[in-house]
Length: 91
Image (cartoon, rainbow, N blue to C red; front, side):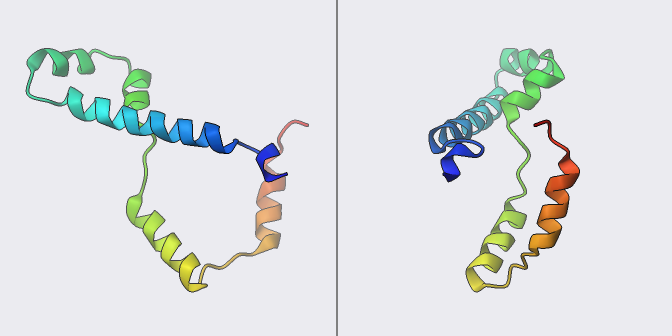
């Protein structure tokens, strides 16, 4: 039932691969060759953002994982429900 809500596992894995591939391409675009660097600067902002992948705060993720593992991550179902209702998604 959970797979019917949101992304499936395979699409989530594929999205992660695309993000990781984008980081690799972005890192190689900053290499020592002048032609690659000039090509990446002439790309549109959307293209650059797609190549770089989503911004990820690794330290924040590690802190949340540690809090969950130790049982100290507060979960307030009422706040979660309120925020979901505030999204006002189309039916």
